[in-house]
Image (cartoon, rainbow, N blue to C red):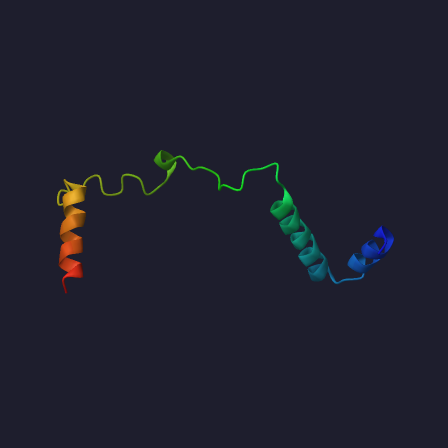
Length: 77
């Protein structure tokens, strides 16, 4: 199959089909691009919105003890 034939086939598709071909090509490039790491990007947890949401709770002073208590009460049912 020649490059010209491939280009003709792609351009003969409707716009949605062309977008799907472009998405698939991007997927294949990502799959076979060995120059980048396969690891997901590392996030700085301190910038995440959920960090600190329970900081003002008085009932969870010792989080380890709280988790232990909740697990004991839930798993013994």
